[in-house]
Each structure stands twice: as C-alpha cells, then as structure tokens.
Image (cartoon, rainbow, N blue to C red; front, top):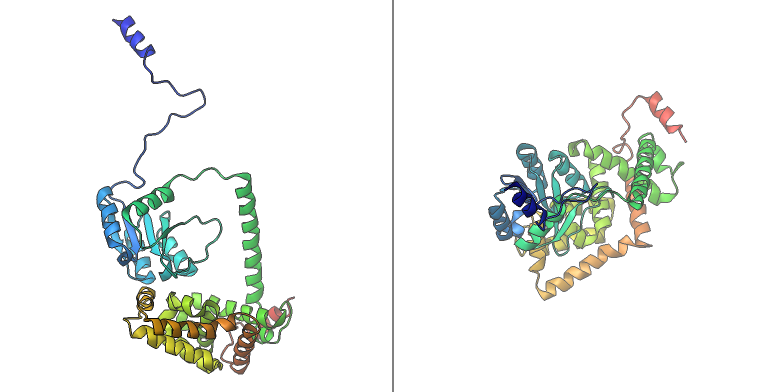
Length: 349
C-alpha cells in the first residue's frame, strides 16, 4: 500500500516550487468583506457603488463635501476612499488622507474636473466618471495591489523629490522671516513683481491653513482674486473655490479689476438659472445645462479672465494686486513677533 501511495504522488502533475522561489498565492479579494469604504461624492455613480459594495460585502459611507468626508473618515476608519476630484484641492485631499491613515485612494474625474496636484511619491488611482461597476472593481484591484519594488529610476526620482521638498521648506522658512514691508519693497531674494506677489500669497495661504478666520479682509481679497485669476472661469466654477463666488466678485472689484469682476458676476448668474450653485458638483451640472446662446456667452466671459493669465495681462493683474497690497499695508501685517525679532528677520539675506 505504501508503495502505491508513493507512486501516485510521484506521478502527480503538480510540481513543487523551485528552490528559492515562493509558492504562488491564491487570488484574494482586494478588500476583505466588511471593510468600510468612504465615497465623496456618491451621487456621481450610485448604482455602480451599490453593485460593487453588495457583491463584496463592503460598508459604504457617503459624504457630500470635503469637510463632512474628513469627519466621517476619522470616525469610520475606511480602508478605501473614492473621491471626486472636483470637490477637493491638494490641501483638502491631504487632510482627508491624514484622517484615514493607510486607506487607498481612488480619484474620480468627470468632464472639466482638474486632478489636484499631489507629491510624486503619492500613488493615486484616477478613474473617469461617471464610472461603471467593472471599471470601479478594476480600479480598486489596482489601488490595493501590492506595489512592485522600486527600480533605480524610482529611487532616483524619490531622492530628487526629497531634495526639492527640502528646498521648498527652506524657501518657506525664508519667506516666514520676511516682513510684508520687505516683500512689497522687492528686497532680496525677490526678483520682480511676480516673485513678490507669489511670496505674499504664500504667507497668506500659510496663515489661512491655520484657520480662515485669522485672515484680514485685505488678505481674503488677495486670496480670492488670485485664485480666480489663476484658475480661469472654467476651473474656478468647478472647484471648491467657486463656493465663495459672490465674495470673489466683491474682492475683484475692491482690487480694481472691474472687467473681471463683472465677467464673474454674470457667469454666476448664468449658472444660477439652471440650478443650485452651492457646490462644485451643482455648478458642474448647471454648466452642462447651459443653452447654446448661454454657452457662447460663457466662452466670452471666460476669455475676459483667460487673457489675464498670460502676458501682458498677467503683468497688469499682478501689478493691480500689489498696488492693492501697498494701499492696505497696515491691514496686511502678518508679522506679530516683537520689533527686535522682526528687525533681525528682515536683516537675513
């Protein structure tokens, strides 16, 4: 009997793994049953989400905006985030990822939506929206698949990114040491008005990150005006910045950009005729409902802002923003340290 068993084993077609090689693993589900998934915004493809979640036994939480999603992520500890790219910027996405440490991220990108800028070392799956169940399942599988070991090129890119990040931190430290007076005076290490405005905006954004309520009215005007001029009408309308379009209209007017203020105000009225405009998703839906004449007018309004995003329009806008900053110099004082410390910081090269 023992000889028969040994002969049967030797005749078996299954071969043992070669020396030094691991046995192949059986395929497993990308996420275990019962895993929690957080979706922002589920309204883009509810049928696909329900189908995939039901087939795999996942628990789905939904949030309509970034703030609610951050709260839900801290409470639910999801293993997967499915995020609409049009509802988050780089800062909000970083906060969302921090609220759900270790969770994989899938960004859904609809027509006209812009994927937020991410560090090179962050790997995020991007899925076209509206998506179907098969596309979502494939994106989930790719997102949770084990990453291949980094190649020499990957390591080189990581080192370059790390060096660039270190350089940015050093620049931020030097910016923090500059007073607003010095920035506006174009002192070293600044070169021209563009660099001065960029550093002034960096200081205002850094202050806003600690709490928007800390911003003075002139700082809010500069941030609102610079955001719409940087994004253009289409980008502004479909991004979270557009939630405060009415305030941006007033900010542009106070800065002295009357034509741009009027163009944005009319564009907001066009969207208001076709539904709510309280969120980026609402505005995107309203924009798609524009009639042919309204769509043509939208293009004309967009051109008003687009011409200011390239030279010489950009130079004119930069000069206007800096002139407003000079006029509001006292209200823009970001430096609250003692006078001796401020003087020492201003003396640094």
